[in-house]
Image (cartoon, rainbow, N blue to C red; front, side, top):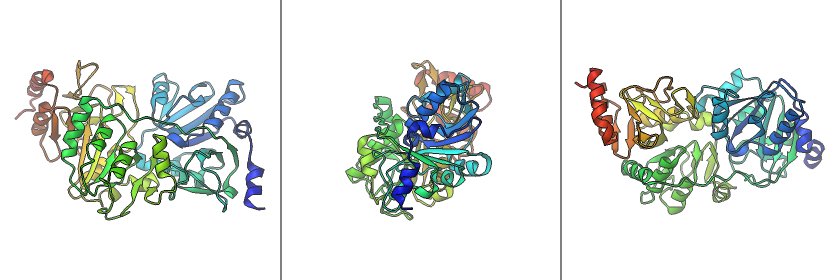
Length: 431
């Protein structure tokens, strides 16, 4: 049977693909643009009709509303890193959470999660019968191997990328076609605080450094502040639009990287139409599995590695919470700890956790004596390196508790510094 005949024999409508899913199954999607909208909505219609129950859907980084979060009596979503919709569902008690590092996700699926079906978006089949996972490396390759069944949503708008996981038509259980646009996420609007913080961090980035920029306005501001640098490299979990601008400006050449020299390395990407066009069939972009890309030992092989991520609060010890507000769920650990550890082990490397000095309209200091009750530690006191606010940079690594506290108070909002100093004295920290 030739590949086209195999393709046609497995092609169905989204409703027919969803009809193969049974109650009680554990189903998995990968991140962001790889979540298959047509199949998911068809699953939702079956739930609405009372045809499915006790489904578990694992995934991460939802970008838009989905039927996965609309039928809590039938579907339990399990968020491995939450977008806006998953965040709300978790806080309503209608979704579960998987504690994990991003780098560990492939191993966790391989060793602990029963995967009845893997659902994902792919680019059209090539002449040899292969589909490309497009803009997502992440744990897709592991799921192609682990899942009992593979359901594909073939989308001509999904770019074929050179190194993303591939799957052969012979390994596919069923597929459907859907030409809907990929999710477009416009760059964040940068405010003056983000630009100020981005400028501080950019001053610490030497020419020839390799970069990882996380999600959010401050990492984007850092990227835009680096256009005057030379021979930068990219090794990052997410490839955002700001990094495409760095490449096109000439600031990024990747030529000083000791591994993947000349290549931009990431594990997934999403953003603008411009970004999707940039990565399509681009031999200079490598989309690779997250257990490799986010391995701190691999990250540390790059000298002068610079990691920039966000946070919600930090205490005097340097413990960073980046994933919840007290007991209220926000996102997940993701790859922050992966890059903090990798950057600090890199020769000349630096890790920055950056955030505005205040929250809640300026009424709350993000620099605190202790984390809020119930807050989770995303980056430990033993791993933390630099903290950045609009009032400057605080170097914590290699500093005592007393030294850390003084450095953090110095970059807190001025209206909270006296109170923070009094609290530190009451805790017998300032020596």
